[in-house]
Structure formats: C-alpha cells, structure tokens
Length: 435
Ligand code: SF4
Image 1: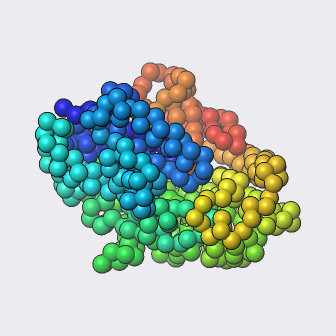
Image 2: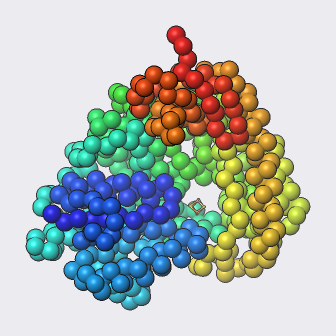
Image 3: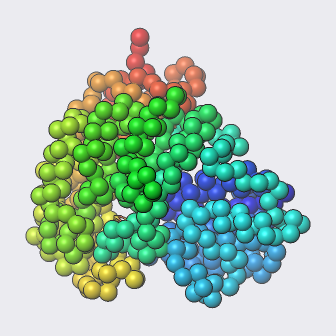
C-alpha cells in the first residue's frame, strides 16, 4: 500500500480541496500518514495570497529537495495557488517536483499515478465518479467545506488569485448535490459551500443554474441541518440570492461580503466594481429582507495612496454599518498584479499597523455591543466538538458558543438550545436550556 502525506496552508478552500484529495486517495487504496518522512507520496497544497505564505512554500520545497535526494522514488506533487500557472516554468525552477496540478484537479493526480507501475504505487482501485462517490473513511466532522466554484473573473487590482487559480469554473449542480447527500449519509450536518466568488456560481455551466437554485436543492436533503456559503463579491449578491437566504430555513442567516474600503477612489483603484453608496444600499436591502442577519466583511488598510482621510472613510463605514465580524489586513503587494505594477506601496508599515489596530479596536466595540444584545436569549447551536472541557458550536448567525460539560453526554453533531449567559466581542458562553 502506498502511504501519502498532505501538507496544506491557506484558506478554507484549500482545506476543502485537501479533504477531497484525501477522500480520493483513500478511495483508490492509499493510506494517509502523519509526517512526510513516512510517506511515498507527498502532496503540497499551497497558498500565495500573501508573500509570507509563498515564502513558507519555498521553504517546504527546499526541505523536500533533501527528502527527494534521500528517497528518490518518493513522489512529490504540488497543487493550490502556487501551481496555478505556467507549469513548464515551475518544472524548470523545481525539477524535484514530479507533478504540478491545478487547484481542484485531483483527478489529474490520480491519472498521473495510474500511469506508474503498480510496484511503484499506482492506485489499486478505480476512482469512483463524483456522481456515485461515497466517502470511504468515517468522517467525524459534522461541518464540511465543499468547493463549488473555482477561480475568479474579477481581477481586483491587488489580488493574485485570478492569475493563479484561473477563470471561474463551476462544478455541475448534480455533482455537488450527490456529494453532499453522501456526506450527510456519513454524518455531516452542516455544509459550507466555497468559492472565491461564490455568487458567480453556475454562470459558466450550460444550464446556467443560479446559486439560489443550488441552495434550494440542498435544502431538500434530509438530515442536513444547515447550509452556508462564502465568499460573496457584492456585485453578485442579487435579489434572487437574498430571497433564497430569507426564505430557505436551512440556509444560515449569515453573509460574508467584503467591502475592502470605504472610499470611492480607493475602491476604484482596487477595481472592486462598486461604490460606497452601492455597497451601503446593498446592506440596507439585505437587512430589510433578512432582519437579524449577521454580516461579516473584509477590509484592506494601507492600499497605495490611502490618505488618513480616506482611511477615516473606511472607519466611518464600519462604524455606520456595524458588521458582526471584520477581517482586516494591511495591504501587501503581490508580484504580477495590476496594483503592484501601477502603484507604489507608499503607506509606511507602521501606518498600516496603526490603521489595522484602529479597525480592530473599533470592531471590538461594535461586536461587543451586538453580542451583548444576545444575553439571556436561547440560540440553536450545532455542536462541533469539545475544547478544554467545554463543548462548542455555532449559531446559524455564525456566533461561536461555548457551554459546559455537565452530564457527560456526547453532544457532537447535535442541535442544542443554549441559553446565553455571557458575551464578548469574539464568542458567547451559555448553558443547555433546561426543559
Ligand atoms: S473577488 Fe477580487 S479579491 Fe476576491 S478572489 Fe476575486 S479578484 Fe481576488
């Protein structure tokens, strides 16, 4: 039997894809091991969204060079955003890598392995097609990430993703439904549908299904309790999608919708394709149709040319719209993007840091105020696991809730009514509601 090791860094999308690779390799008869030193096949699933991530990959590839020298028959395969473009060039730079394959294209890995002699670790079994695929290994995760669309057509000026992951490619709707039916049969109760720009789901398929249609189909799956989806480019959050979130009980009342900046000139330089006014109006429409929805956003501070005043507009927007969660990052230039070639990275590091701290401080106040309103309320929590003698899980609005282990009952995968007894900006504490 061939042993494999998979190394993953990056976003939830990469984690979901690694999961798929694990399922595929297991289903063709391979076995996962805990370290690359024990493996015949090493798969590196990479991320290049920031330079620091790319540096980690280069370090890992250096380490693998030594490993391949000591164990030349081992197979090294690289996927993820690092392997998104020009394979010939990558092959020249990293001759010790046996195979580069595009993100999500794990079938390429299996076909490549199939070409090998059986003694060299070719797969024993056929890879089941996605439509009838069942997950072989017992999966204890009640929450699964499922990638539904790859790539992005937006080309925001600062972002490397479209160059590395390529153009948008949606998975067929029936294939996704089948996969999730299979996951639910194996115990999954919540799915998080992933795409760099999930709202674009389906536009490249012959039948052009809308994301709302996928949500409707998934809502019909028995024993699937919850459905989430991310990340949403504001331009693709349309009336049909908002209506699906409002009307489908299983679809969580939670949207992740990056604003990125609160100033029109910066948004234009970022090539985001909307104005502050349009973003604000979209939030108003969503909140009107889905009262109580929780909204998360992303913000970049210190984009080239961002003045104190322009940063102040971002801060003002966050204060006005009061998001449940704000993910903030300092601008970091990525070679090959429009922003990198066109603009100087002219906001000093310490100013970026200061702005980042200001956003975090403001958000801590906003989230504390939002969460304090939940005090004493009973919320439905899908329990995911146990940490430091406390159970934890999430509400439909994506609030992390902890509650004590009173009676040694296994709550994993169960939907519990939890009465909130303490709140903070980041999490809630509670107790199982007594009957
Ligand atoms: S929407 Fe913009 S930021 Fe998001 S992946 Fe696409 S190009 Fe990058």
